[in-house]
Length: 235
Image (cartoon, rainbow, N blue to C red; front, side, top):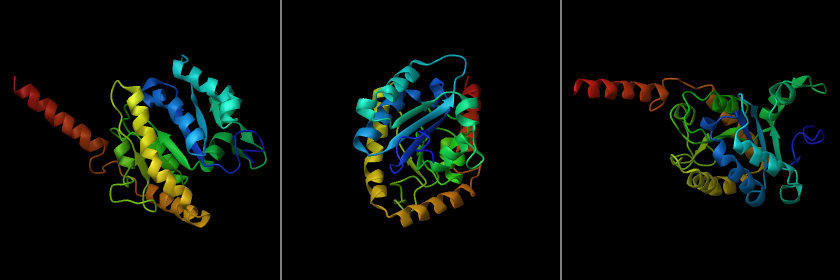
């Protein structure tokens, strides 16, 4: 249905979704390189969906340029910037909002944040059977309980972490792209039945979300508080 309505670019290619505010802290700086790699090298499609927060960031112009480049990207990159029109619009065929259906259709949700206090998008994605691609910053560790490659294989992972390098968008984008090579190769080898089983696993994992997860946001804030007090008392 989404493909027939022109909302996504392919009926069969895996869908990678970014959803969030179009602001610098959300990691917009790596999305263009990410989108190009997904289309050219990983046989996927990308939807960038969010809302403007008072100004139009330069990264969004680049993403819109990629969307309009049908010759190289074949309509497989979609960028939606209107919350009311692109997310809240009701699809009458199923009486559900466009934004909700896109979320349910996504195979992976990318959260490339520079900083992230809590990170509700990954929880939302997991609850809809969408694995997370995560910068693994601050609060994102609460949701990334089963990072791929760290004792978790293609059947038991919930997220694919990558390393952000502060102040270096190019290297951060390279780390993101490189982190996907092996897990996506393995994921593409799964049968449809195995992919559905993994989606069920992700949904069940979302139910275990805990703000008090070891090493997560709360632990980090407590550690920061202790170090701040220690530093203050040392003067």
